[in-house]
Picture 1 (cartoon, helix red, strand yellow):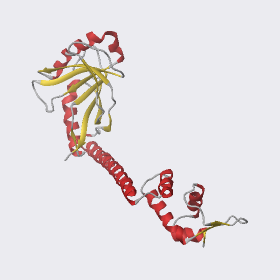
Picture 2 (cartoon, helix red, strand yellow; picture 1 turned 60 degrees about the vertical axis):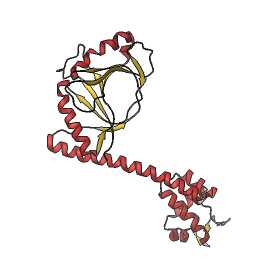
Picture 3 (tube, one colour; picture 1 turned 90 degrees about the horizontal axis):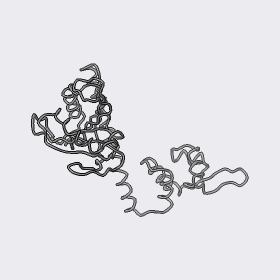
Picture 4 (cartoon, one colour; picture 1 turned 30 degrees about the horizontal axis):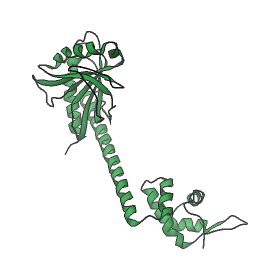
Amino acid sequence: MFAIGEFARLARITVKTLRYYDEAGLLKPARVDRETGYRSYKASQLPRLNRILVLKELGFSLERVAALVNEGISASEMQGMLRLRRAEQQSKIEEESSRLAAIEHMIEEISREGAPLEVVIKESTPNWIVSVRDAIQSYPEIGRLYPEVYSQLGAQAASGTPIAIWHSTENKSSDIEAEAGVLFDAPITVTGRLQCYQLPVARVASYVHHGSFEQFKSVYDRLTRWMEESGLRPCGPCREIYLQIGNPVRQDDTSYVTEIQFPVEKSK
């Protein structure tokens, strides 16, 4: 038998941790003195304690650790759980790597241009979109598609947020596949050329631009460079969500606020 202090030294943990594991039902002492309350442990309890410590180190919650050590799961079941945990940890590593690359890029942006491009990697919102899609001959020409959307929506349009989706993957001077629409929190019944569907959730590089549409060329060039240097690449149509816009729309209005979203994936 070992006193609690001796057993703690053998396991290289604190007495406080052993007491906590006792209270949590993870590792009960082999004996508790009725008069003094002193806890004693056996060497045969070390394997169970080691398994607890390993599972805790792997990131399992104490509740899950308790279930694993108490249920006596098989080696194959343990392997399956560890593979799942490995996948979760790998995902976290990739997320942190993307954040680290973004930080490094921001440092470079500050030194190169004086002001960083503040891009956020996030999950897009699964909004519903009412839209019309057509080929246009220049980017500003998308403006001619919105009256068709707004005329059918009527008063409902006031509760939505205008959006443009660019389905042409490269910068083109003509035959640009464009989609003009309005975002809503719920579906809306439409007819004719209009469509209503739920935008798929995507992992996006999001940048909020404060300024005119005339600045978009420079903004998109910097965003493209940011993605390349961050180890990311576009994997879906670019979205422009117009958070603040005038009526009538002007290309040179610097009061506009636009969120630009690029669905992204890691470069291969």
